[in-house]
Image (cartoon, rainbow, N blue to C red):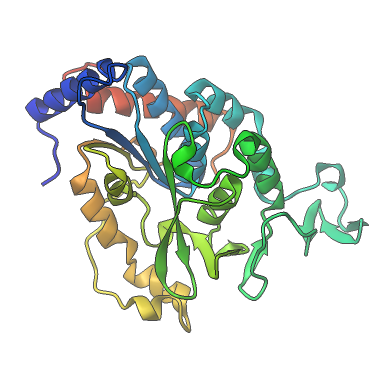
Length: 326
């Protein structure tokens, strides 16, 4: 049963606050706090709202695991960016153009060519080769070069680190090998590569090649990585779930999921639902912002404002269930 009793929530909040207060005193053992950030495209703006509240409460995060947009938000937060930095980033980017590698100088041209690349209304067909190696043998309309360049610039101080454990906050990124049908936990590579792999929605983005894997969006198998951050050493896990419905577990054959008609089979069987149910139940503090009217592409300024605010509201309600802020 999910831990939603008010007395339990108050106890957890007290324990989290106590752990944070004692963080600077190495002589006093304290429980470690982990943060699991789920995927959901533009709805990741709500995760920034949650981070704002955690900072207001003085809650120190020891470990972070993220999937898809949760990997981007979590990876940047693990690098030392604050919620205010991420909020500014979300508000300042033209996300749909960025994700689509669009050349805005050519957006009014039906067809044009620059540097050997053909553009239709500014969107590249083919595209230049980026820093990250992608798998062109698997269907994917977008190369993801533009988002990769942005993430590379934001994480450049940590280029060359041997392990994500060496970031200011230890971090894990969840992806899926589309050929072996296995979850892959990324903990040591170029950080922007890991984030780019975790957000590679099958059919939309080219998969990323890494250590023999062909990687796509981690949400295909684990969209709320509570289990991952728990394995990192977290005693208390705060989970931010962007999913808007609770799904029943279904029977599925993972080997069939990515075989012939694989995406269709996945859509019917949804193997991620079983893991999602388990992870929701294992979270100590479960935060589920109300975002039903928003989708993965709701990057409009007004939508982002509202989703950040709803993330804040959901976090306060989860941490202080007697609050009148609903």
